Image (tube, rainbow, N blue to C red; front, side):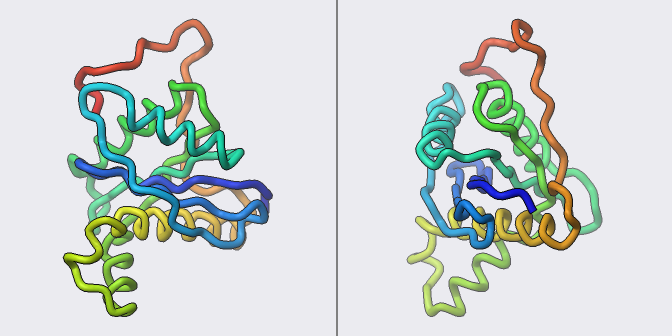
Length: 167
């Protein structure tokens, strides 16, 4: 098991949930909900600042795959966002399967006695916790980094960041 802080990222259309783990990679905890920035890169910049503050070694982005294994528009959106994070030059980015992470997070919040209206501000963070904890547990049991590493273009070939159709 690799040691080091990681950030978990749950990409949504309006908000992005962020979680972090401890330096021993044992336990994921909620960190922040970042507003999605469809026209610029304030969301990417904020996540990179959080990664820098936490001295994160890696970003783990949830990849929403349909229950039957098929791709969805959310799959494409999460992949595009992970690509933006990777090109922005922060820590390495991994995509991990996140089937049912939001459903699981909602169930945990309901079990804790929280009503749906009360959880809107934290459901994205809770889903990021589920994604990151699953990745940590998977790495611990399999002995290898989870998911798929998002490749960065070679230095000098990075496309300009900003608005556009990626987000």
